[in-house]
Length: 265
Image 1 (tube, rainbow, N blue to C red):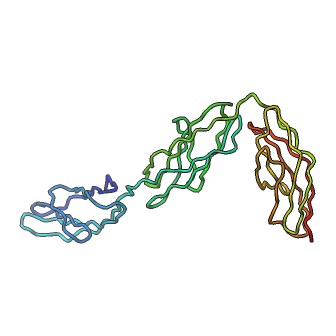
Image 2 (spheres, one colour):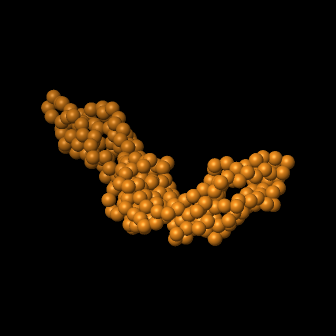
């Protein structure tokens, strides 16, 4: 067998012997006669992708004496359908030297095997089908980068590259972090919620947003002009340490001193 494609394949066999001479061979697919050939090969075309076929061959001499059919030979056509184009590209964690890109999963008639990642038209790396993100590093500050993603299945069928996502790394000039949020205070404390407020931070350029952490775990992000946050889903009679982080546009940051908040019993 050779040259298997999504729509066909070629089959070869060793010649039969005869006391006079073999005249030709009959070729059968899935029990049905297909063709007669004088050679020792035959090419099947126009078959559906991902279908399995049982091939047998019979030798016939000039007196029409027929051999038994050969043992069956099974061939499966290849997968000819490419995955869908990856979509939903978005960026996060942008810094002066890198950023993270995520995308939504492609679909395929069998399965997506992996994704190729491209930056500015050049291949960068390959990630597995369950990895829908990639973090770029070692980049230049203040530069625009164009990212595209390609999905590939186990048969090597490739989707088109995704629409381009343009990401600009943070400029190199600002290396000054905001001041730490101060005067953290709690109010409206209940069994399951509490409100935390703070005095706004200052920055040489501007505070872009605040991240709120509960017991060291990230909870939420609010804008740089917001100085309070309502915590919910808490457990009664439980003490939580709340920290607020001030960040500027280039991701320079400073953390507040933790505030201890205990919900009502």
